Length: 399
Image (tube, rainbow, N blue to C red):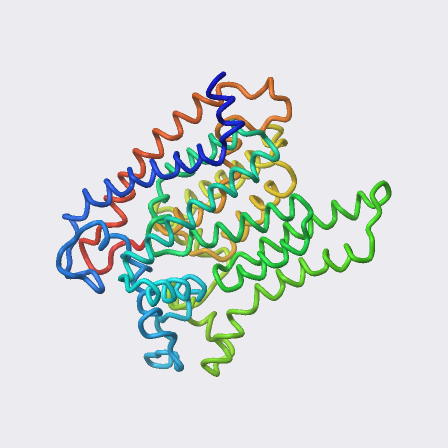
């Protein structure tokens, strides 16, 4: 009981400690696998592989390119086909890194990874508050522990945008959950320069606004609140189009952003839904098996999310899970990078640790489930670092 009392009184401190312990574990693993890295396949390699070198592999080198050279005025093309270029990457994170490098004189790897580490700490604190409001401090601590130990969690200390995007996303979800419409609008708008999550976030905003409208009889909506509520949708709408619009303005090509995103796809263009089936077919060597496995995953995800074992998470987090999950199904070319994208589905961990039931008496073995998931996550994280962070050939699987 003393531990439970501590969580209620010092929840935010406890989640920060858990987060930092998990990040120390990740740093040790990253340092351990660094000697397996082939410097010949690393952009900006110093020839000496260590923890700091590991923090900016893969997409990290694109952000370093943006910090050092900015965005190109002309899209690189070969035979009229747009090639991979920095316009696929949103500007808020590299802008923050560039500013801090100028102020501190630090290197990209050190400044960028430490910034991600700090922002990740802010994200888990906000996550704990968001979850505590619905299921209590103990469950909030459990979710943060499992999240911090999850396989792709090392990106929270790498030169990636996950940490920043989580801060903005969770701020928006928390504001929607508490009906703080202006704050939700500001956070949603900011995501437009950090991460392409505005579309599923807009779905969450619509549901939150509908729930508020439904309560209008016993809690009337004043004209000032109507304006604030509308601002939330406006923020999401602007966020969804602001970066493609900037890419168009800077390059003179209306489809600059979508063509750039298509350059990462196997067929050179963005195709909705189909890549999941194609990639599962490649994985299982059977189209029928691919479709069946995908259907099982979709049905399983929906059942986990909408079942009574998740009622306590509330409408905002539940809607986010469904909207974001189907958004990924529509736009993502599923492969190894899917691990990173799943970090944004953190509310599902409430169900995994058994804390999503409305009745607290039904929340059985939450502590033990948390310990089991943390152990599995740390073990899987070792595999993740060893397999996806280490480049042994130039066409390896990107994280």
